[in-house]
Length: 463
Ligand code: ARG
Image 1 (cartoon, rainbow, N blue to C red):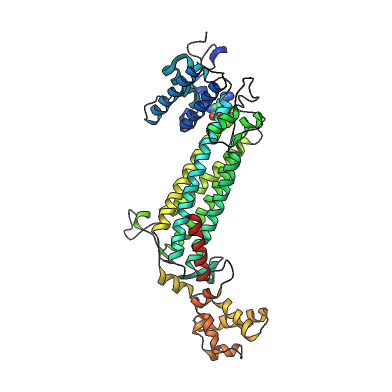
Image 2: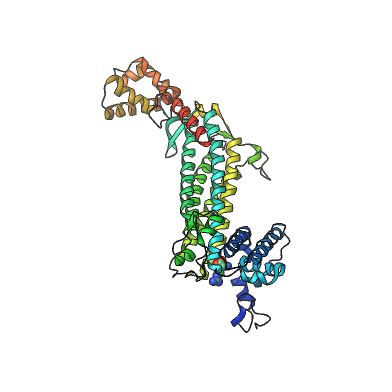
């Protein structure tokens, strides 16, 4: 007999219930209720396996499986009373199942533990998030490819050190992010492959003496195979850390793109117009149109990287196998996943809607002596100068233009010949920004022809 106030699931050896503070620090139901669907899927698979192996009668298993569906619809319908006294999602579900199907519910926990249960639930949840993030990234890539296609010929300044470097094409710049997000998808896919092993049946830590069929539960839940070591199965959170790590890198990419959008949308740059749908106004300055979404996405890396650090810190130094420390894994991952999904959706909307300001981009591309490298290359190609000397001559021409207060193409031929007597009039052909980008045809280069090839390849890949 257990004391009235002790826990119905494990209170056998307890004479009294927990202190209120103990209950507050111990209970995870406030957040792990997000694992309800996964918990019920895991329990249904477990019950089916127990019946198939003769550990449980088919009638009990059927009652349990049906009852679990009722519990799920109650939770999804929002009329389920979660109880902190029942600690977590696993015991909340089981307790309600008992009210629905009676004694049979008590047989469900045969040959398993909450340790393998939570490991299974959490893997299923993270797997869903990986799939959702992949879909979000693909949508964002499509939006960027559409921008690249529309602006394959559009010239803009390319920067290093945020100083004008060489002209590039808008399409090329957009496709740089498509590459980054492709690597993010690759990392997530890679994490998913390693994640996709089923811990269920590892039980508390040592496996079980019941003749369970772990292949069956693994298959039922869409895993490739069962985990091979029960100690590792219940104490591993690498799958969550890999997801968070990939999410952090992705958030870093999103943050960089956000930063560019914030700069580009400013009155000083005017490279892009963000749509009203993805901007906000100021309550005091009527003229303002703020890129809040970009700023918030730029900041989300703080939460996501923070969650990554938090989980690494929770896991370091933990002895095998399960320790309650590991209950602290979930909120971090939930928060990071929410932040990532929202950021991806907002970025996709912003990119899809934004308008490149072609005149401003083209004008900016032509300032800052952006074709100086083209001029140096011309001196090498046409006059046979060593590159170092060509670099020096070009430097002197830049200084001459600067002194005159103009750009390189505005120097007269005579002014150029004053610096190097062999310069000919056809030098002016390479000083225009369109010629400049068109000439950069090396594989991976910014030439519109190359950009169009990449756009076609991405459209094919993204479907
Ligand atoms: N709520 C727990 C968690 O999230 C479930 C596992 C509890 N296991 C235990 N041995 N107390 O980690």
